[in-house]
Image (tube, rainbow, N blue to C red):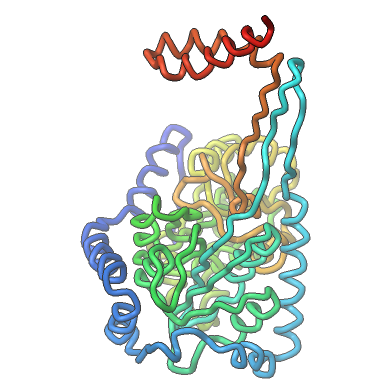
Length: 435
């Protein structure tokens, strides 16, 4: 993991280098995804069965594509009480957090007796992609499915890659607790296409959410417009702002935790202390050597792990705001002073007890977050992403007479005589009634 002394004048240039490293020529992937999406769109289930055999070496068919209810109900028996309690606690905390964000329908009367407002309602049909295959990620289902449940979505379908030993019991148990029964063992771009266009086995949805690899992300981008999506997520990232009072063991542990996601993950520490930078680098070596995913961790830190030594904390803040990290950890003596200056971050963790892993599993906010600098203009996944608004307008007679002439004037200015006429006939009729 490299340590770099960074001048204030070089911050933007260095961040540009980081972002360019993350950019990949995705044309080959896009061509493959185009073919897959079109094939599923035209052939439906047959395409899913063929692609599962080709990519997953799994014989998918009409009988096993959907996980049966008995298998979902039996999942609990394969899990320890510790794991089940952890899943229950996580769901409870996520639901509690998201309920506080629920908006309400509003109607109000203005000074012309017009009734205006908005009607809030859930998106009816939601599809959730849960990564799987070689690993199990029940937390991904918690951080998406619990939000959909709080929003009141009526139909929730889960797709997850098949495995020779079946779908993870932890995922099935989580689905059972959330009341989700539509679980399909289909993964990759073909699963996204199935959710977007529908097949005989999988009903089409209105919105697709959930993390996945570059093929899944590209497929979500391709079907956007046919359905809504949450975001096109890139590799995960963490940025830690630390000072001389910070604990290097905690910092190293959190950088490693992020690096073990994937070799493309970014783990960055910003500090003004040369001594701390050296201590963190040493701790990273010590802690990573004994972990099961040390090969991935070491490759990730070699590619994208950096410790930047800057002149002032003000420079650290500027770096962070330009970088707009997915996860931002502030481990300084007076974190509130730093936090109030932060403009762009997906999720902010304050104080040395606030390891980013709490956010991944149990704190309450969803761990589905904007990446690659998109925190400059987007937000973490929340219950609000599973809700849609209808505006409400009821024009009174008084409102028509007062506002109508302005509608006529604006419509004529735009050359839309039909619009002007649609209001003028109402104004004229009201005059006729008045006579």
